[in-house]
Structures are given as C-alpha cells and as structure tokens.
Image 1 (tube, rainbow, N blue to C red):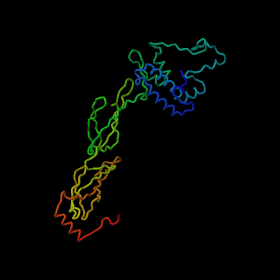
Image 2: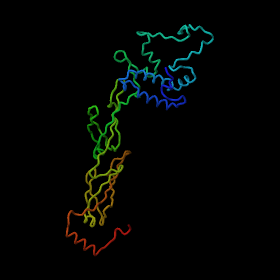
Image 3: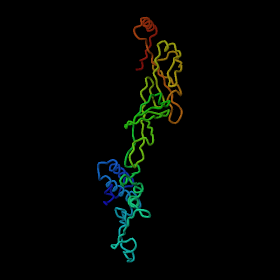
Length: 315
C-alpha cells in the first residue's frame, strides 16, 4: 500500500483536523455508490479507509511516523530479541508472521480479516449480493439529504399550517409547519431523504419562505401597515378600524393628525422566537377623494386664504 499521507494528499505535519477533512472529501468523491460505473472505485475507497486508519488515529500515526508499523498497520520486522527461534509459533521460516484464514464454525471468516485490516470500516462491512461486501462509511461517503423550498402565507407562518410538499422523486408528504416560523427557517424531517444500500436514509430539509402580504410588511417580529384615512378624519379625529392578523381593531385618530404619523399597537405583531409577540406599527396616509370635487376645492381655497401655513419652512 502507498504511503497514507500520499493517499490522503496531506503533508506529514498536517493537523488532525486537516487529515479528517481530507479523508471526508476524498471518501465522498470516491465512494463506490457514487461511482457505480467505475470498477476501480472500491479499491480506491478501501485504500482511503486504510490510510485513515493509520494517520487518522493519533496513536497509530505516531507508530507509523516512528517506523514501528508499515502503511498497512502491521509491525515492521525488528529482528528477534535474544536470538530466539524465528520458526516460533506464528512465524514463517523467513521470520515473518503468518495467518491461516479459515471459514466455518470456530474459524475466522473474511469479515474477521476485514475487522483487522479496516477497523471500524471492517466492522461495518456486511455480505451483499453474490458474496460481495458493502461498506457503510458512517454517513461520510454520500450526501443523502434532500432540500426543498416551501412558501407559506404570513397568516400560515404565524398560526402554523399543514401543507403538502412534493419531493424531486415525485413522492408527496404532508408537513406540519409550526406556528411562528420565520422566513429562511429550515425544518428537518429525519429519514425522509434519499436512500442508498448500506447507509442510513438521509433527511429532508425544508427551507421556508413567507409570501409578501397584501398590506402587512414584516419587520423582524413587528408588522407595519399603512392606514388610509380621509381628510376630515385627519382634521376632526375619530375612530377607524385597523386590520391585524387576529382580526380588525379600532384605533383612535386624534384631531389634526398628519399623514405619516405612526401609532403602535402592542402585541399585534409576529410571535418572537424566545416567547412573546411583536407589535403592529400603523402609519396614517391621508387620501383625497377620486376625481374633482368643486365643493372641496372651494372650501380649500377659502381656508387657504384665511389660514395660510408653511409645512416646508424647515427644508
């Protein structure tokens, strides 16, 4: 086997985090499930696992760096202490350890060999069709998560809703959107993603967006709305109905209210993530009647001549 540092493409002085990152990236790239048309992918993936078993483990990495074990994790031959018989138990005539591979009751099978060679990867190997082995990479090799987008109305975001979502596979699911969801929030449904042999099912990630409202504007946990009022309501004052997410309420407009004046209705906004509710800010907009009104024009001319004022004097 090649040098494990070379296999993972990292220098000998690389940090543990750099080694882990390199292994994950390469394992995802060369996993057999992602390269079904490449007959060499299994060999490359096995080589990556073996390299990671050596330098991904702090103790084994130190042994390898000191020359105590080779690239396969086997002890390097150091000679026989005290001139002992090289043909002792478990040794070959050349002084190297030998293994007898047996199968059947009482004997170590191929899975035991994998355990000794690949550690955790070997332990997770299991027979597949035709005697081949499927490796579970522990969720590193494949990204089986699915991502979909869902748009809800402002009322649905505040009150919660159950909606049907269609997956790229064509499968449809009923999804409960919790009350108080905000734009950009992600909901995770475990086990509803893609599947692959030898892997846990991925998750379904739903990113929620909130559709623009006809007249409410979202400002964090607060809501803002423009309230049209008549000229005489602005001058004389009065009570007007204001829409909220929970139904219309009455707002008292003081006399001589200018267009653009903002009123605050506490607790009429959006639910806050940490509890409580935001506010609703109501801004008045004076609206004149459509079309020409000769009577209003005459009134304004008379009022202008007798009561001139200059609202733009400070500009």
